[in-house]
Amino acid sequence: MIGNRFVRFAAPLISACVALCLTASAQNLEERVVEHTLDNGMKLLLMRRAQSPTVALHIWVKAGSVDEPIDRTGIAHMLEHMLFKGTRQLGALNYEAEKPLLDKLDELHAQYDPLKVADDLSEEQAALRDSLKAEIERVQEQARELVVPSQVSELYEYEGAIGLNAGTGTDFTNYVVSLPANKIELWMRIEAERMRDPVLREFYTERDVVMEERKQRYEASSFGRLSDALLTTAFKAHPYGTPIIGWESDIERLKRPEAELFFKTYYAPNNAVVTIVGDIDIEWVIERMTQYFSDIPAQEIPPRIGTKEPKQIGERRVYVKFAAEPRLQVAYHKPTIPSYDDFVFDVINSLLTSGRTARLYKALVEERQVASSVRSVNGYPGARFPNLFMIDIVPRSPHTPTQVERALYAELERLKNEPVSDRELQKVRNQFQADFIRGLNSNAGMASQLGYYELIAGSWRYTQTLLDTVNRIDAEDIQRVAREYLTWENRTVAVLVREAPAAQEEAGK
Image (cartoon, rainbow, N blue to C red; front, side, top):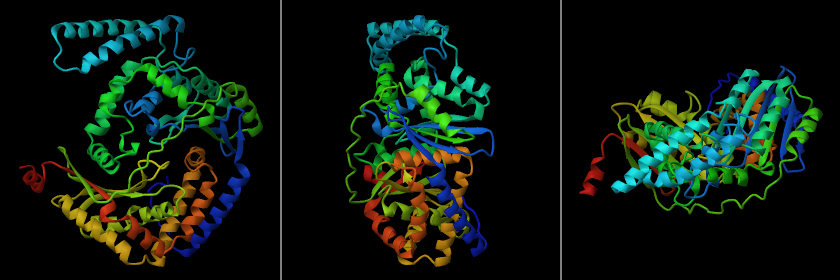
């Protein structure tokens, strides 16, 4: 989504320049983005930019945490890790010798994992657990001797890769890299092989890495702990309430065959979008993409989740005890793309927290000095389904979360009752537009925007309606949306505290 960056504009002249740039950009996109779909359903979005001899290459797969089985949370993220482990050719010294060892590890972990997490084992069970652990370590060492570690990453880096990365979200998983233009075919060979024939080697050792990642990002982080509690409280039915990384009890039970099944189910060419932006010959790229990817068969994608979050009918509140500075998160349920009200929330988001002149920063940080930081997110934690508008605030000592919360609600009431001035609204539009243009300046930024909206909105052309719609939003729209959604019965509040609040202690007694 559009970032929360702030750009100052000093005069209407700049606004006029921005409008002209946007018009030109929209025309250029329509003329310059080439769409092509392979026979197996893989969608290609290609754009030639010859400013530098580089290319941004992105693969987007419509498979995120919302697509996971209910008792196998975290498997989408785990699979993202595993696809850097290689294929039968990449990362392997002797796959024929390696394969039976990988199968053996599956068998051993099927016996060992339940014993590892069980309580009150008998002496016989404890001895079996220790024996299985020793056998696992022995087989892992044998398998490790047949592996070339990190060969995929090192191969890319050797050939000049920049920004090699991958990410798993609620809605999708994407794999990104920028390369010299003369290395595109190398990328095609690697990625086609990863989609056609991955080997999920080192699965169980990587599972331990993910468990440690969970501890760092969720259990040792005030933001992670609080947002985890916020989402599970806000969503009672929809999987947006499940952490992307998965629940600890699920992660420690994940098995390699389960990840392989998830891969075969969702990592199909007809469930993927490829965006390539840079110094390319478009006809040549289409020809080579056909050569490398067209023999990967399409798959029947399972029906998407049909569960809908019931309408919230009263405030939900959760307290999290953690040894860190207090923190407050307040979230409101709202619609998603392509609802007009989602566009209005984009404007509200910018109005409240984008930069030092934004309303919440001025009121809470500068004037009242009750907070040290404030930010908001529209479309949390995803955008394929109805989501949240979330505000995250760190109180400034000695002020309490309660004081900060009161100050926040005062500003939200102001949003409902006082029309936003034309000048303030125009500043938000300018900033929004400038952020959007800046996001398209780089090859990687353009590839990201095209891929994201193609996957989430159904067409990359959504980007062209985005700015036109934002420019139509007026003060009445903002008041209407604020009154409809920013209400007591629609909000979820999560508070991070060092000690249980007195009222909660009394209720417990």
